[in-house]
Length: 86
Image (tube, rainbow, N blue to C red):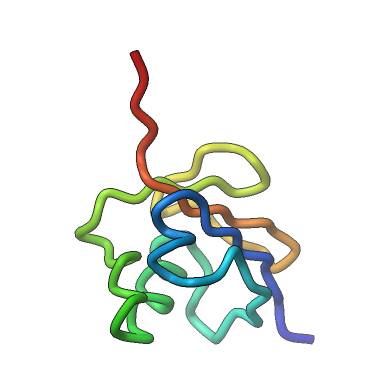
């Protein structure tokens, strides 16, 4: 069975992508947060908002995650712009 993750998009990313989230069967080789971002950004056009060169944060199962954080298929992955506060 192919691993499937739940992906959530927040704030400006939600607006740029035009959707709040999706479920995605992980393709072969997409096994980290960074690989998932690269895979999604490769969709082109508005998906370039997730390009690795952009300042986007990620969380896996509601914990902050780095690009090398592994994914196992039952994960919830959230992408969001950095939060600023005062």
